[in-house]
Each structure stands twice: as structure tokens, then as C-alpha cells.
Length: 470
Image 1: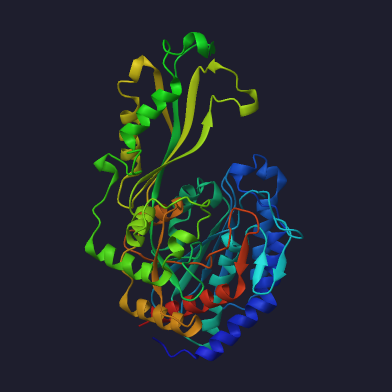
Image 2: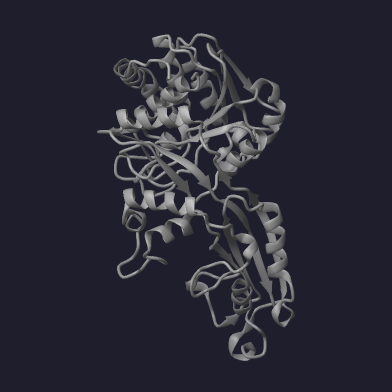
């Protein structure tokens, strides 16, 4: 690695965050820039445009040499920023972040709110603070910190979109439109991920994919008195339960079809054990179980693998059921269930979705009218090995700025743009990390950014960029 002055790096990054980025991030929090999935009038409301204007105005104040900034907006699509910083050494890096936000949610603590930036100690509260408003600032500062020391760095490009929280539906069009401008990255850096704790840099190595849709079971044209019809007319709810048993073992929660599973390697088990040794019972205890409720597995390694590398089923919504206070003794006409199936990296989502639809619709019990309407099919992500020099630099930087060496991390959730990136740049390596550690509460009430972690992540990214020149 080119010789970095660690102390000077730390001092500069801290100053840029305190004096420049954080005041701008406060203004960002104040913008109710809901992602298009949550704001049908996003174009007329102009909030997404306001985040673009805010960030590009901040860029104009940053003394980055070789910086060019362009705003793109294809007809009918959300706007996107594309920046380029000319390199002083070989190599290409593509940074990714987003400026759109999840809805307000309820339950914010007294004195706090989604569009109200509040600083309490090390924490900055407000919607979009950690997911992912800080990411663009962190990436830009990481490059600027190297220029301040005259450290060579690769060419760095930044793609900052405004529809990630909607599943990035506009991103493929921009990846195609800007293909020549985006180059061929050797490394893709994403600062929109999580952390196991705030005591080291966690590098996300996997994300699960997702198949989603609505299972509908209909049995009658109108509701019928249950005292008259039950025992003759089949229950749509019972049939739905039967169909789901084709997919899931209701005793264990394991999914039955082998085409939804991958082989769990010895290396994966070894890394899982390392993670469990660090996080311990927090892997389970951090979830808000009611008193007496037990985890599906008390074996930490098995729990971690089930959360990240095995398929799971969740029922996230229901239709055809009246509210309890309006429910009479009526055999209902139909039952609709919102089905969410997480799939491991390596399972092709479109093919698996087709097989899932076939599994649930085939030979319906009692001739019920059954349909599985698919609405989501997103692939997972598994990171290829990091170049040795970059891996060593990240570990050294984590030791320096967090006090402990870096660790691999798994995310059981789904980030659709990661599979898009991997499909677009199959030969690239991926540094997926972030500041979203325990208690950050992204998407929920009291979303908050741990400011010291944002600074430390920025410094670690600087070290990675410098190491690419070796």
C-alpha cells in the first residue's frame, strides 16, 4: 500500500464530516424524499429532485481534483447522479449509494421525527440518515482524503440513484444508458449494508434473493353461514394451509423443495463459526421475542446459516379476512396470502419463481380456484474473494480505526441492485459494507446514524482505495 499517514487521514476525515458533510446531511434528513413506491406523485412533488440538488450543491464545495458531475433523468424515470474523479493511478472503482427514503412510520420518540434531524451524542436521528444518505458523502470524502496526502488513487465513479427503496426498478435502464460512462470497474463499493457490532469493519459477503407474490384460494361466489356450509363447503383457509405445506415443513420451518437450497460448504460453516464467536447470543437475543418464545434453533451457527444461506417462508399479509370486530359466523369466499420466500445466493430467482407457482397451483384440493400471482423475483448476491492487498488494507484500517480486525458479514435481506451490479460487472470485486449496526432502526421509527462509525468506515474505504495501487 502507498504510505498513508493514518493520523493525518483520521484528522482530515473527522474534520470533513463535522464541518461539511454532517451539516448537509441534516438538510438531507429534512427532505421527505419518499421512494416512488411510496409516493405516486414523486415527480410533481419534487422531493427526489431536491435531494439531487442538495448533494450536487455540496459537491461544488468539495475541492476534489478531476471531479465531474452529471445529472441524468430518462423520460418517466427517477433522477440519478453520475460523478467521476479522474484517477492518478491505474484501476477503476464504482461507488453506489441512493438518496430516496422509506416512509415516515409511526412510533418516533418524543422530540424526534422522520424529517427532523436530531443529534444525541454519537447518534444522528432522522429518516435516511443511515439508509443511505451518509453513503455518498462517505465515498467522496474517502477519495478527497487521499488527494490531501498526495496518495495515488484509481479512477472513481459514483452512481447515486433515487429509487433503491422501491427495488431499483429504474437502475437497469441507467446502467445501459451510462454503460460507457461507467467504465469497467475492478472494484464496486457499496455503503448501504449492515454491521454485526460497532467495534470493527464488517464486510458483507452475501445477500439472499427474494420471490414474492400473492397466493389466492377461492371456493365460493358469496359468503355462506358457517353453521350451514361448514362440513360441506371446503374452507379456503384450510386449503391454503395444505398448499403451503407443499412448500414448508410446518414443524421445523424448513422449505421442502431441493431446488430452493444450496450446498453449505465447510468454508461457509467455518466463517459462520467466526461470526458467531464474535456476536454470540446477540444473534438471537437482539430480536424482540415475547417472554417464553424460543428461537427456531438455539445452535448459533445453524441459526446464522438459516438466516442467511437457507430458504425461508414468511406470510407478510392477508386478504379476504374481515377485521375481528367485523367477523361474523360466515364461511369466507376466499383467502389471499402475501407470500415472501427468501432464497440463498446462487438460486436463480426467475426459474425458482416459475417452479414455486407450479408447485402451489397444481392439483388444487377440492378443485378450489388457486392462483399464485408473482410480483417479485430478485437474485441474491455472493461476493467473490477480495484482492489480497485490499483485504489486508481493510483489516489493518479496521484495527486502526475500530480497534479490531475486519470480519465477514451475511445479510439475510435482499438488495436487488447488488445482483444487477454483479450481472453487469461479473469480473469486479465487491466491497459491501456500511454503518447500519445494531439499533440503527432503518425503515422504522428512530432511524439513526452512528456518526463515529460513519467516519471510521470512510477511513477504511480510503485505505482500500490506496491499496488498489499495489
